[in-house]
Length: 252
Ligand SMILES: NC(=O)c1ccc[n+]([C@@H]2O[C@H](COP(=O)([O-])OP(=O)(O)OC[C@H]3O[C@@H](n4cnc5c(N)ncnc54)[C@H](O)[C@@H]3O)[C@@H](O)[C@H]2O)c1
Image (cartoon, rainbow, N blue to C red; front, side, top):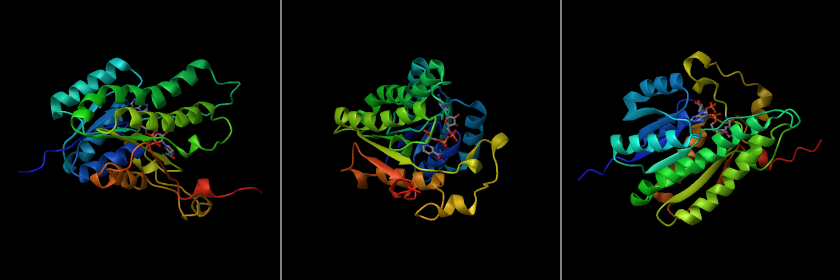
């Protein structure tokens, strides 16, 4: 008997790293739901990836409980359940702390952290039944900072902690892991109206111990392993995929 099709929900799957992950999961044989806020990006990516397998855009704001609940119900109705939740949706807020409003702080928190709580909460019953897994996308900014990134860095530190908390609470049925990407160039993975040719310089690449800036495919490859049965002893862990940048001393 053929194995049942696995179903993945990828938040923010309409563009950037999430789109790269969605493409890889389709190639790996998953049906993919793009839980995406941007309608243009969601529709476009659904059409673009259509030839690779079953893919469905469901408009979702991950910070909105009603929309998350509805998206999980729709996924259940269309695909029968969830085997993998990829919490990828995220926004960058870069502003001096004295100019950062409470509203901007809360918006970063709602998307980058509360969104993971809500999606995990509403996907957990199905994931538990189907012995699935959750993969969160944090950032190397959970570990180190540039100026004026308090909101973003704090949410990403939260993602790493939420990952091990969920792994302990939801195991052994559900494994929960986290990838912290470094610099990943997504200019060619944006929706068509914002897509650009990659404009990286020699210095952009050569400062990385691995010799280059990252690509969505680098994150998708790590994810593909972490959600596979070969990774069944790995849970609660954070994997840095950054071309070595967080291991490089930069004192001048
Ligand atoms: N690109 C990088 O260098 C990098 C590095 C480290 C971490 N990350 C993380 O990777 C993830 C993806 O980043 P990216 O660079 O691909 O960004 P991106 O902006 O290219 O894509 C993010 C997608 O998420 C969607 N989104 C935003 N808010 C949403 C919401 N509330 N609900 C649903 N969808 C929403 C956007 O519409 C967009 O399609 C983010 O969590 C980001 O913090 C990116």
